[in-house]
Length: 347
Image 1 (cartoon, one colour):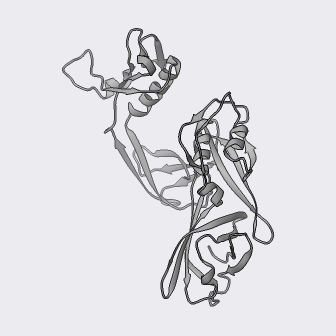
Image 2 (tube, one colour):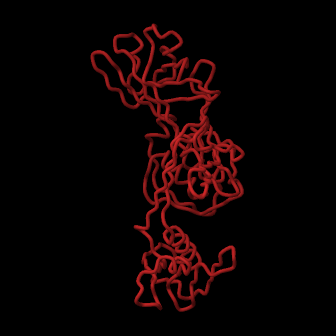
Image 3 (cartoon, helix red, strand yellow):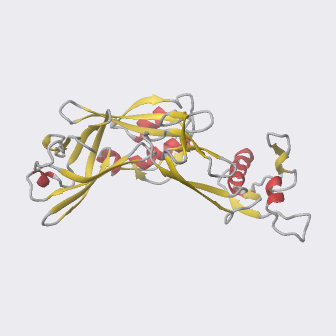
């Protein structure tokens, strides 16, 4: 990060000094700096090095804070790891506050259906977070957590319960101290919703320009074409009679009355388990799920089957693009035959 002034704060959020690369010859010059951002929570890790023979290096200790503004966005970090020798200090800092990173919460069971905001108040009773955008405000869900976890892990779990993506947005005061941490809840990324980031599908990344190469990997190691899932007290799918069709009206998944399996008909024809028994040829999977509701059992089993009845495909894209976390692009590689088009999201 070129020419970014970084404030060093004590545990009480009082500025003690600065690191600044505007003057490379200065004693508070930092180097080997890397800012890693992640889709989950829009969390960040910041690492850097500086000379140990400076006054400012003595401020780089566990528990102190770092804050700065970069590309019109505020960042606030806790120094978590420090390695020091006679010449160099290497530090790593995590975004957010110790309240979220280290504090643990106990098991929790909702007595009735609750909103995302109500769960947030239960997880964070001290009001460490301020709820901003809430795209799942129309949902109310009854849920429980049986074990303890960190506040941050519980919030990520809450996002999964509400099929949401959460983003932590820090806001600094003029003196570099922390003003507030805002939590935004987006509907998770799908064909209908963007989630975190911007939909930039109008921007195509081309092979030979933004993209230098694409490698495709496919794997059928964990493939199966039918599944029998058992719920509580021996609950099975044998009482249901369901058929799922593809876009062309052909049978894709079948759960017949008296049959405890959901069968992926088209996947069986593509990946037969054997060529001798023409009446079967399914690759079977068995499992259990904690539910007393046959509809829930069917939904979970079908979701598992959809994930595992087709090859797992991974595309590794090499290139560079100016983007934000969660942004979605169209990639075109004309070197593939036929031409390969991918929707790619920055994670």
